[in-house]
Length: 110
Image (cartoon, one colour):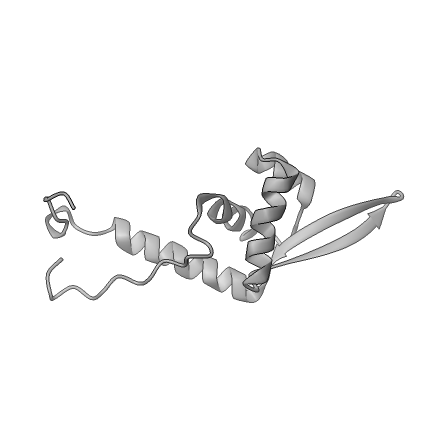
């Protein structure tokens, strides 16, 4: 990278793990999604999804709410405004990283 290029924006360490990035990508265009639907879309176990949702919730990026329908308890999840901004900023950082011109990349292995 030459000194004329601005520094790359930082990647978000909370969102960057692939499973959390996928969760945010699925939740960004919708108001909220059901836990079961999200689990099925991601093809993960309940416990794996719960762990990733907890990490996002701890950062303030996600909210969960329980609803009752037909006597059954359901969990609905949604990105918070902060989470949506963090996800979109992370995507912008990824786009900036992938947009580097080939001549700007180092050719020597690290």
